[in-house]
Amino acid sequence: MQLLLLIASLFTFVEFNCENLFDCEHDSLKNDYEFLPASQRHWDSHKYWQKVNNVARAVLSCGEQDGTEWALPDMVALCEVENDSVIRDLARRSLLRKAGYEYIVTQSGDERGIDVALLYSPFSFRIISHTALRILPEGRQHPTRDVLYACGVVRGGDTLHVLAVHAPSRASGAAQTNAYRVRVAQRVAEAVDSIRAAQQHPLIIVAGDFNDYQGDEAIRLLQEHGLTDVSAAAVGQNGARGTYKYRGRWGSLDHIFVNSLLLHNLSTCRVHDADFLIEEDERYGGVQPRRTFIGRRYHGGTSDHLPLVASFML
Image (tube, rainbow, N blue to C red; front, side, top):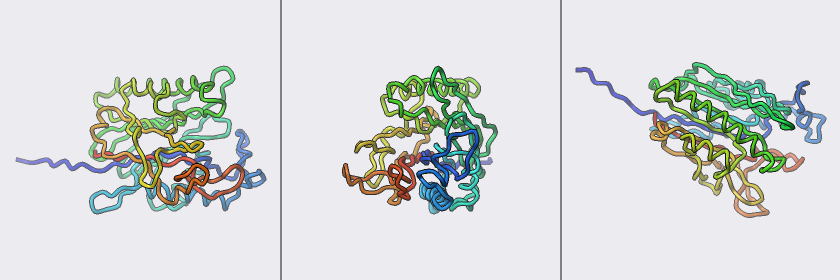
């Protein structure tokens, strides 16, 4: 009699808003003037490459101990990246160049050129298909980022569906922009329903910067569609109580949702607050993310968000 031995393998998923990962070249179709050498930020190649390598270092440090070996993240959803060229630099020319990541990037209608990207290891995720889901603006709304959908096979043969989201900003006011974010959540929920209709036992991850906190309408809508926010209680080991700090208060605009089947495979979910990603908060106390700029002044940090790291046994 032949015995089949199934060994669970660790699958590490990272969500990270990079905060304005722009190159130094002007895109004639986009309003990217803020991040050019002649801008007030003086965004030059030195600052750009430091930023790229800071993001790469953050991704590398999000790895997990898998048995006796250190394993790099299997998949990384990145928000606030300008275009394909910056992701190519990140995957091929930065500290990540030996990691072997493949990538896909949206080409959104966002006026600043902001896109969403997915890095993945071809050794742990064999991609089958991917597409961008566009949410059209209404009235005076500005175009927002596309939702990136990818489907592939993980080690062991299960099919994994991933939706990476960067919802509309709250810059014009949370209440005034709420309906737009709810429409994005509705589009994501429709996509999840379609996946369930097409496949009997899918594994689904929905992750990104939703620009909403726990309890907000868009977050509740996704939960009502059978998704669990596994990052709801995630904290860091070095003082971070969320992924984002605003006026001294920690919260999480970033979220990782999974469906019930994948929830059973969850090992841990945490905020990754490595020492180099945070600094002392001199005004409010505790720590805060170490960002690239403070106002217009170059600060040299990585992002105003911290990464979320979820690990699954698949």
